[in-house]
Amino acid sequence: MSIASRLLLASSLLAVPVLLVAESHNPADYPLRVHIFGRNQTTFYHNRQADEAKGEGRANLFENGEAKGVDFQYECDHRLQTSSGFETFPAKWKKPGAELVVLLPEFGKPGSYDTCKFKVEMKDFAYYMRNGQLGSEPTTVFKQWMVKHEYDPEHGKNMPVPVAAGAGAAPAGASQP
Image (tube, rainbow, N blue to C red; front, side, top):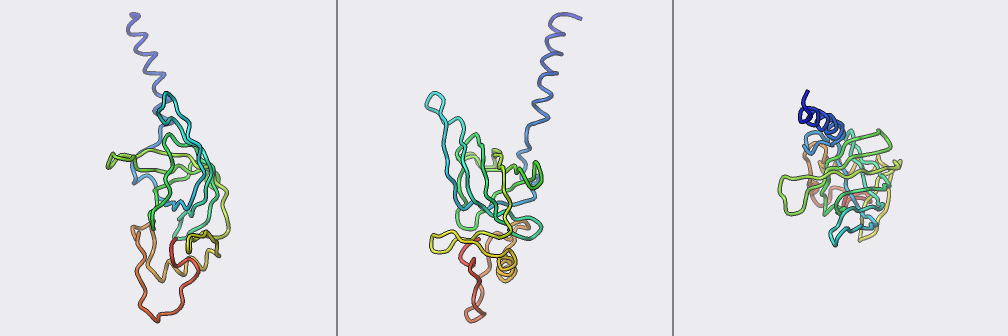
């Protein structure tokens, strides 16, 4: 075997583990949805270019038709954006109940995505935003609101349907997920 053949074989064997750990960037591979309410972030730079972002935040994870609050720590290659309005991001479990991989759109590159790892602490309630203040409520109350407004981001129902006036009081989370 020639030296060139050996080098080619060695380089291909080194590349295989990298390919095995690379996360998919196909939204169809991410069945869960995450609504990010807020985050604190530190961005690290190399030669005046953003290289990495780390921080913590709060979100709702939509799984099996139900929203649950999560507190998270994250590491991303790019700055983490929060959700706008009712926007959610695709996600999947890397380690169930402990670590999520979230698929985030790359700014200025339609149809292109990057992944971000979230270490999560699951809550037994859901978060909501009202008048700029973050609050929490039982998951059952939030689920009632989701059903009433036909809101289910896991299944493509990304905007709540308005309820006719006089149809009853809305639960606390009615202003936003």
